[in-house]
Image 1 (cartoon, rainbow, N blue to C red):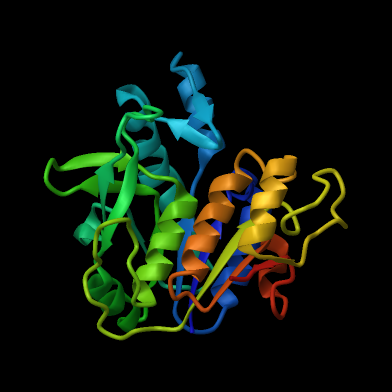
Image 2: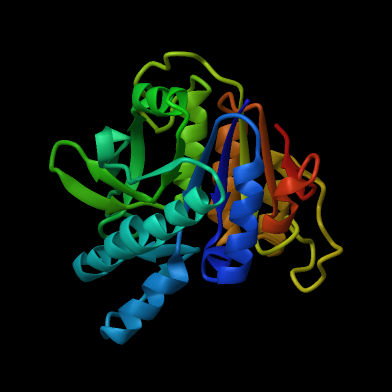
Length: 271
């Protein structure tokens, strides 16, 4: 089974937690892909450059100056730091963003009803490239910078969305609305794991013991209406449901510390 793991920014920002997670990730057997964000680093650098950070429903509004910062941070500093640490852990890794080998092509999001700026929605995944790299024994480390093939324009893309698009495409599904991915060389059984600082989706954000073990689409709508699920958890769950509804075998939201545990614990998404 191909494992696609997305690691949250709060883990990326903590050197000790990141080191521990990467050792556990390197020990996972079989083919694997790591997708990362790195939001707090980008926010800190934006602040030092007097660039305002604007977030709407957990998503970053990306103007031209912000795009330069997130590209340098995500596809440069964070990506290569993770690759280097994985090499130390004995995991032969290669760092990519969506523009490399046309890994992940996107279209710029329409400005209505909200103008997010230079933000992309996935349109197609180069599954042949992924297959070739995995077959060569490499682990992919993917930064959430995609590109518009027609304009040659880099686009900031939510890392949860990138992980979901990769998972759906490698499972043989359609990673974007109204678009088709490159055909998969081999349709794979795919497991998508969202790792962050909490133990899973919590009924009470201040109570780590309040993990909701299973969530279906109907309960997600109810939890959202009640305000239990909000902010950055919204895109995570939206992308998780898109994956499970489009051919991905299993989707789990769990803590970074539990990646080495059988079943990972946390919250499992169901149709």
